[in-house]
Length: 351
Image (cartoon, rainbow, N blue to C red; front, side):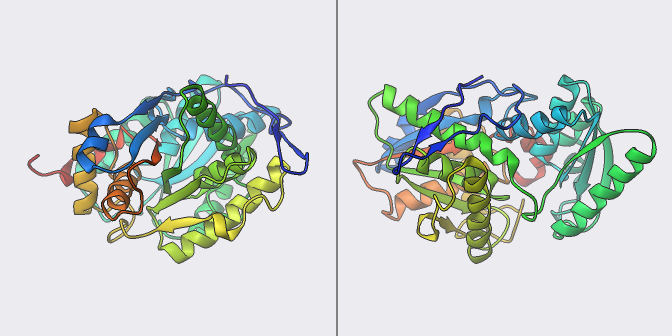
């Protein structure tokens, strides 16, 4: 496990996440790699990729860092069952099922109908196949746009498990609940800062997908806890930039409170773009398809259509527009999602 540090703030205040219960699930530190071919092709800044697709835990992804804290709390509460909700091809659900299996717990997954895709592989392949292989009990929820209702349905499942003598732990979806898992990226931000420093690199900007906003918020707080003003741009993958801006700020405020550095993040620190969202969550765009193809054929990186494909499209677009310039170093956070490629195979047509 990567060492949890106490970070020094401007007025001598200490920040530590080590008081929170945590289990070891992720293979960290994950690699920090150059992307020389994309750098040369785009003719802009030097591009790096933080390979959080390499966290292990059922084919990897950013949620392994989150789950170290959620399962830490679940173990502390002596839970025997974990319950989570997500889209049909949810990476979070797949990694939750894997963590539950690893720790000897039952797992109930609620799959939400968020995406207007009815292809058989979307419903049965990719992450869904892995959910079943990992032994999760699957439930379905029809209202994919209503987070409060989805959380209420989780509580209904939890009540049933309690009635049967179980002790469930619920990982909620809505921003009404503390984003405990975001603490994983308070640590993760320090990890990539240290890796860059070891190589003599100064990172000027970070680009990442922004959905639930937990990873986005955790990175912001982690950077601030190291007195870093690196610009972080979140590429919207679920909602428009105005709604996402408010969500990121709310989540970052909550994470900063948990981490012991209240008011570390201001609204001036939050940058989001919805220029690459397209018609909505999990829906195809030409930019996403181009980004997935370029990443695969230039750097051997496999992206997914929902999060990393659109956020890589954002990185490419920001370089092409001149937002990032030659002489800068920009880090792209690869949050994983590889199994979802198989669930969305009908999207790709004739490659």
